[in-house]
Length: 103
Image (cartoon, rainbow, N blue to C red):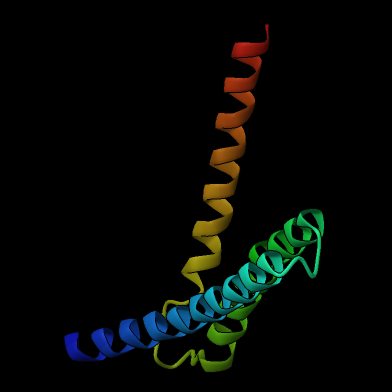
């Protein structure tokens, strides 16, 4: 059982590593483009933001969805519930802290 979880963890690790490798490749290309003055710095800032905020989460999400098997994770339905609970808790904490520091 432990070996199975290690294989799953390594599988997701390598999927994430693949996504990060794509981003490093994009960064190298952007560095080359900037050094050759093909694009302006403002255009590269926009492309960098696009890569970090859209490309990385999309690559990770697609990789997880493509290889997700509910039979391997019988309690997978707990994860969205934890996410909702954490989001609500973080929202409450941020509202309390904001109201405390603003007034």
